[in-house]
Length: 133
Image 1 (cartoon, one colour):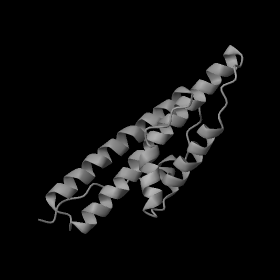
Image 2 (cartoon, rainbow, N blue to C red; image 1 turned 60 degrees about the vertical axis):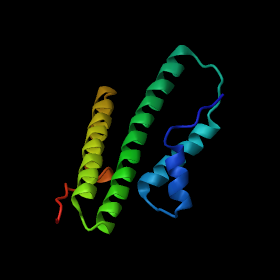
Image 3 (cartoon, one colour; image 1 turned 135 degrees about the vertical axis):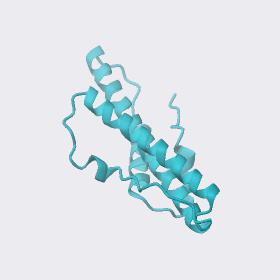
């Protein structure tokens, strides 16, 4: 029995709204992989490696979701003229994106992946905003 990822409804909503983003594309590609996953039993070693890979994938999903939420908060901020409430929501989304991006980097290092020189470029986070009012 396969369980849908928690972010699936967000992806569906953004696709329905015609939103385009590399983060959305990566999440959609991962969901296709979930659909193709089989439930066959493998050796313990393979099962552990698969779980490590899935855990890393989930950490990357969290970053992509946080970046999508940040982009949406940025759009709401722009529409609201950078008022105090929308700026606070944007900056809160930004702090969450920074935290989950840091978690992904730590996860990669724990699995002994070499440092990716394009990591920050792959997961860009805009600067904090200040309110205009």
